[in-house]
Amino acid sequence: MLLPWEYGVRNLARRPVRTALTLVALATVVMLVFVVVGFIRGLEQSLSVSGDANVVLIYSVNSEENIENSSIPARTPALLTASVGGTVKRFGVTHVSPELYLGTRVKTQGGDGGLGLVRGVTLTAPLVRRSVRLIEGRWPAEGEILVGRLAAAKLGSSDEEMAIGKSLEFEGEEWQISGRFAAGGAAYESEIWCRLGDFQAATKRQDLSLVSMLLSATGSAAEVSLFCKERTDLELRAIRETDYYASLQQHYRPVRLLAWFVVVLVSAAGIFAGLNMMYGAVAGRIREIATLQAIGFRRRAILISLVQEGVLLAAAGSLLSGVIALTMLNGMAVRFTMGAFTLRIDSVAILIGCGVGLLLGVVGALPPALKALRAEVATSLKAV
View 1 (cartoon, helix red, strand yellow):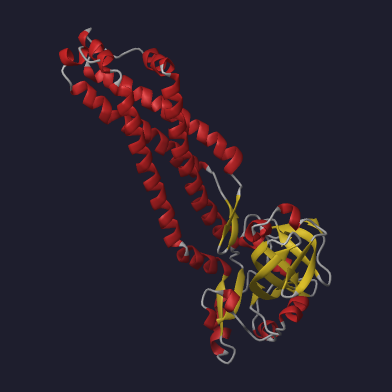
View 2 (cartoon, rainbow, N blue to C red; view 1 turned 180 degrees about the horizontal axis):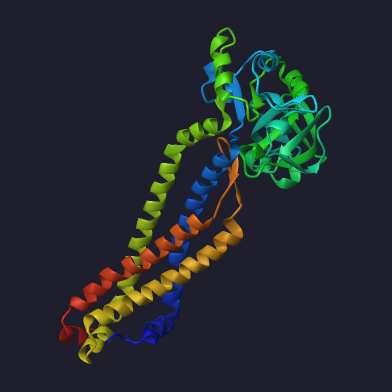
């Protein structure tokens, strides 16, 4: 025969201070799990939505995956347009975007700032980067810039300093913000965009970092790659944008593995903390457990009741942490080497976080309960 369900619930209410402290400890452990898993999911989501399967990137073969170090001739877009077919062309405009991409020190009006990612673009950039949407303001004129919605997070500044009309300083010049854009969570959202000619003049460069081409249904990335291999004098390489960001996924794989290792460590620490608290809780109930055995309840029934208490506390802590994570952590911007992205508390994060919480309740309650039940009933009844 099992103990009544209400027995375990009433036991939690009889020791409000100990119950509250245990609940806070379990909720803290689960919250840490939510933060780490949200970081992993946010990084993976940012990289997965950044690529467009119809876009091909052409940049220097010597820069490997680091486009910031790429340098290609300014005539490259014209050569590609003349030599490679299959590029989207509407209303006489070829969807080819020449870009100068650079990591540089950016200073805000408040005197703060940090390392920002600046991309010099032309009017064809939004045609190729189809996820980009202007959410506020207008396209930049001379001496003006667009800022992504996560640019403030990348610079470590406030959103107020990224408002329209504010100014940023980089490459020895002051630039006024004319608008803000979003890109559906893609990596571009942490960038600053300005006119290509203005950026080339500020950096005293006439070359480009890369060329982005939007291919039509008849276009072939292999044809673009073949052109790059044939023109050895240009030292170019071509790669689909989706493949480029897939390579970044591999590049950041050690970071993701380290983050999962942190999840394991946090969970292990939580289990040991739970064991410590449950040992203390059970130690004060030795006579109660012995009395239950003396009046006829089996050890299995008492064990299930003790585990029930631990699971109830863990479930409550997981629920509390889940609500806080969804309302306060979900969508929080995080600065990273590739730019910035948002924490993502999705169904996977909720499942892992709550699963860890329930595991803490079960594993934390079992060892002290088994130890208490192994003691002799007569001896336990005399315990103080």
